[in-house]
Image 1 (cartoon, one colour):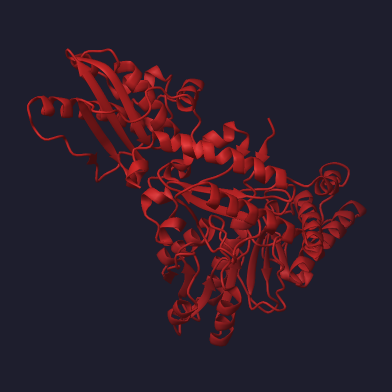
Image 2 (cartoon, rainbow over the protein chains, first blue to last red):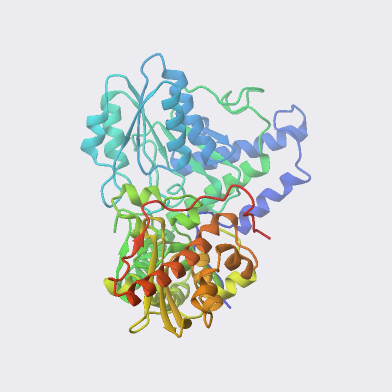
Length: 388
Length: 150
């Protein structure tokens, strides 16, 4: 049976070229980059090169890139770091209802620590309304954080418009670009963002390494104190193999964007979306039809439950994900889908299929042949289908 | 996602007694679509014995597996015997369920009881039992003694 991994929003495989660059840093290139001797200098050079590669992906300067232990840590550093640094200026923070937990829970934590928090609603396609955003800004607002693109529904936010409002009002703007970085062209010299989060493992790099872009001149406080690595903002001996892997993954991503591979991915995504919508009745696309991640397709399939669908797909060799309560391990289905106004029963039937760089047209066609009978079979068991 | 054992997977992949029933003698519908599981049980009763039983379930793999197994366990049994079926019996027959899925086996027990209650009401000439979509989900992880993960 051919197995088709369609969960690239969860994580990607490390590209073989990335792995090759990482391997020496587990063995012969073991020096501490903070050491003065040759062993250390060799590794320091490699980290500098990786930083330059990640910076190039964003058109940033190397000095503006901090390596962290992943996307969640970078989100925490951005939000808590700004809050700590600017608490004397104001204590109000703005975010959206569909942020990743790494942002939402961090902002809620600030709420308990005496900050005022505004959580903006989203429209039925998962977008923050620009006018809501503008209206939420107060004289004591210090930071707004809105994700570049959503992991569950793929919707890309109007980041430029939101950032321009922040510039105009003189507040800092952070965006969690974990899903978008490496998949959409990002240029921080052009885009009005002050802080931006990335994770290597979403772009064919290793897990456990992320980065925070911090615009030159923006001051944040560190979370981790110690030896003063990463410009004093993230102490601890560097994850050298991980950072080198991130650098290689960033180069790969830049090449893929430049070669138009993203457009190929987008065409396959549209083939999948159109195919699912035309072959299965009572299905809705979740998220925005066009303003969405090029590799992201997500649906709610009515009258059936997501976990059952995932298991049936898994046994057919297809790896997918869902925001149903049974897959999240909580009482509630996806808070993202609920924030978009979907009812609980519909949200329980969510299905996410996220393409990767190696996904082929044949894979998409296999999915389009496999999914409808699974849905049909589960619906035949459902007490709801006749009431449709 | 939960880790299911082979028996649960088998029951989920090839469930028995699936589908609606024409002119049933009793129908029970329990669960809550908000929580992501609803179970509907149809009974055909002859001489106080469950001659046939069918289910329709909206829910996760555990809900479908327990529906199938519970219906198999009471098919051919008397009403009194069927009423003795507990969620623990169903979970045990499946070789154990992950703790967060125990509520699914509870739903199977309740579904069969509701269908029997409906059957008895009909025999007394009372109107059919309305669907019981609980306002509260019982998606609680049992506190003690219900740990059935293998």
